[in-house]
Amino acid sequence: MSYKKIFACLEFKIRKEKVMRRRIVASVLISLAFLCGSAGNLFAADPIKIGFIGALSTPYGASNKATLEISVQEINEAGGILGRPVELITQDWKREVPLAVAAYKKLVLNDKCLLVFTEGTEGSTACAQVGARLYPTYPHLLFAFWTAHAGFTDVVADEYDKYKFVFRVYSSTSDSYNPKLKIMDFFKNTIGTKKLALLFEDMGWTELFRKGSDRYPTLREDFEKNGIEIAFYSITDIKEKMFLPIFDKIAASGADTIYWLAAYTDTVTLVKQWAQSQAKDLDLAFQGGTHSYAAFYNMTGGRALGITAQGPEIVIPFTELTNPFMKKLKEKEAGLIASSFGAYDGPWILKEALEKIGSAGNVDALIATIEKNEFQHGFWVWAFDQRHDPKTGHPYQPTPIGQFQAGGRYVLVHPKELVEITNPGDTYIRVRDLRKRTEK
Image 1 (cartoon, rainbow, N blue to C red):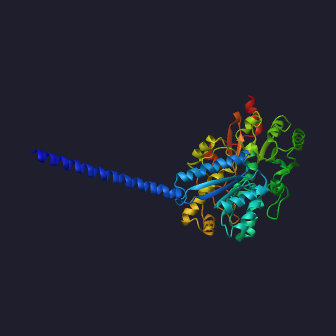
Image 2: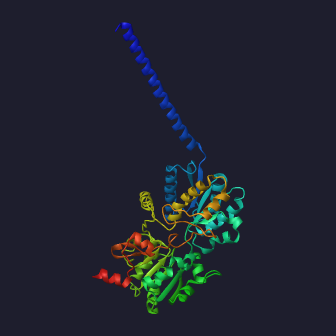
Image 3: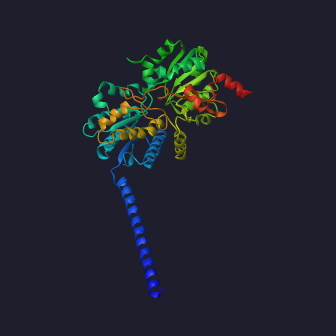
């Protein structure tokens, strides 16, 4: 082959390789441009904003904030909502209603939040009143937790058009009367209560139980109607520190079970004194308060052996996402509390409802979608009744009850559907029997 032919061949190969390289570079650049453009569109899009008004210096406020952060982060990792990122904006109300109202106005008017989580009955009630005035011009949703007062959602039932944006993502004091939750069955058939000592701390959240309403009897009347005698009855001050005289009276009354509704009382001191009192062999059940924490057993030096608490800090594997969430919550050094469920699942309810209607621009349609559908993500199935309260009873919102057994093991003992998936084979053990076992 001549020199000219060889050179021509080499030149042709070089030109061909250059063309190929240019095509490859062009292809890469186009791909990068597409990817960058897509990412740019995602993050350049206006975010869907979620607000949270919490008492951030309190354990429950900090836990709610951590939980919402986990939920929002997961949603963004899953592509956001309708291709838009989600932004969480947090405000501290320091348990002062005027601060809650100011924060709510800021989140709705200035930050343009589509959903605002509020905390506490007093703060949430005030925010709902402000929200009702803002809704016609600034349509949005309010999800409330730490709102146990049964009457919180009366406004939805009484003035639907004005308060339709309000939803409770939390339990209610009225749940104690709900046969679907089988609370009365727990006392009668699980514990075996025949004579009850019934005590309430003197706080607003126990008012329904103490005084009843046009919709509900007093809790005393409800127990008596179900065949349980009230052997002792008392209303206690949340500042009380000397419980031994009370326990002496309970022991003398012939009660076999103590039911104390105490969220703000010093229950660590209460339980320590119970374990040394004449009533130490009586079953002790609580509603509300720090006794739901797994750490409560150690806080009492092990004297909480046998007590039960509603809403226990026990991991119940409702879905395959429950345990991963709990791991993330632990990494944030936050505890599982009664409001964690609504705080984690609430943003996902928003995501699913918006993606059903395909737009974030019609809040009336969003409300209707939440009303008509069921949702499940990390925990139970969420569905709302006409008052915008969560539907209750398996597979909906439950009232789990846990018991501290030997060695501080926190065991789920109610309801049976959840016991079977959490700690199958475990059952409630009466306090006197637990004490006998540990004394051997």
